[in-house]
Each structure stands twice: as structure tokens, then as C-alpha cells.
Length: 132
Image 1 (spheres, rainbow, N blue to C red):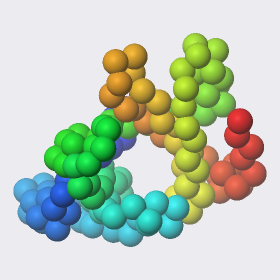
Image 2 (image 1 turned 120 degrees about the vertical axis):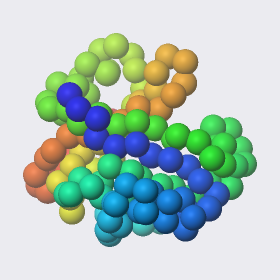
Image 3 (image 1 turned 90 degrees about the horizontal axis):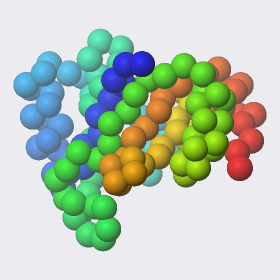
């Protein structure tokens, strides 16, 4: 297991993006089509998008304007991990990103913080997926 990325919510995407680009010498690249409806940026170190920024207005439940949104871990064994969550009674949501050949599971810790598990997959695995 390794840390995959951190997602930060902000009400000022441009300023936050520029801060990370200048401080850490990151590079902004295109985000997957599936998530383009959400305002934001993916910032890369080498070939990995390690900082994800998403826009926030600070309204509603679990939506502070400036906050760490979630932490993601890169794992192996998508189906086995998904079955483990199911067996443990942990609710989750799935997201497939076929253009970057990844499958993702989102779930919460017992006290609320959001976690994400990221798995490498073929584009075929993503497009043929059947979820509950």
C-alpha cells in the first residue's frame, strides 16, 4: 500500500493551484472526462497526480470551504478489497476512470473522514464493470 494522492477543497482554485505549482514544482495536467463536471485541477509530480484540488463554496454538510477532502491509498486486488468492505458492512461507492485505467472505491472511517482506494485496471475492466 502507498499513498496515492490528497484532495483539497478550496474556494479559490486559481490561487491554491498557483501556490502548489510554485512551492512544489508540480505540473498541471488534464483530468479524466468522468470528473470534469467538478471544478478543479490535478497537479502532477513526475507521472503521478498527487494533489487534487476541487472547488468548494463552504455550504452544506461536510463541505468546509478550505479543508482536506480525502486521502487516497493505492492498493492491489480490487475485487477482493471490495468484497472485504461488503463483508465488514462498510458502505462504499465506486468510480471507474477508463481513460486512465483506474478503479476507485470511496468509503468513510467509523468517525467520518473520507478515504479512497485506488486500483490499476484495464480500460476493459472499467467499461464492463457491474456494481451493486
